[in-house]
Amino acid sequence: MKTSRRQKPEINSGSMADIAFLLLIFFLVTAMIPKDKGISRKLPSICPPGQNCNAEVKQRNTLEILVNGQDELMVENEKLDISKLKGKVKLFLDNNGNKTCDYCSGTSEETLSEHPDKAVISLKNDMQTTYDFYIQIQDEITKAYFELRSNYAKSKFNKNPKELTEDELKEVRKAYPILLSEVEN
Image (cartoon, rainbow, N blue to C red; front, side):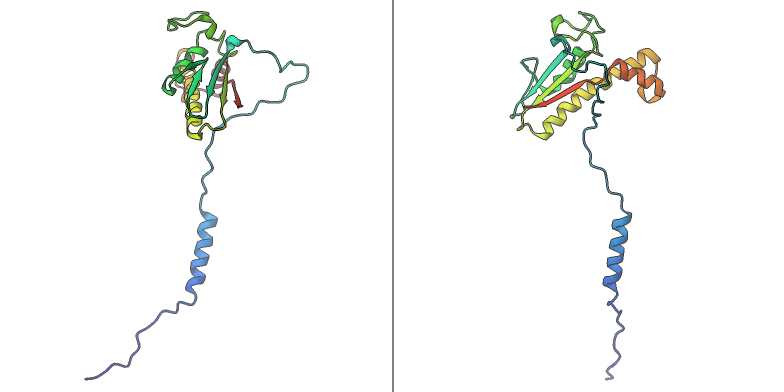
């Protein structure tokens, strides 16, 4: 029998490490890094000269939301399930400036704001409150505002919020401004 003394061809792998390193650098440079997600809030502007920015807010125009370290929610000194928070916020904000409203049955007029542009939501949370529960509360408050703004846009302009012009959108935001005061205990 004849034995073959031919060697099998080999690929020079000396430069493979260099090629892999260059590819790694290329993908790191060209890859899109996602932005961190968070709560989008605009800080208040600096108080203009000659204006009183420390004006007292009437108790009636403040909805007090408290959260303890065990993720328990209390709204206006009443324990509340988070699933009912959106409805409570909507009821507080949207009474059309009246002391009474059609869907406010059983609600004292002193617990409703005078008008949506005067209503302030005061959110106080404990240091032990979980981030997840805090975000759920923020989501419920934001949903309440967006639903009220959407209803306003439909009744005033007969349009969905996505179809509004910039001026119409400003008017909707002015009708239902998000006035949120956050405090940590």
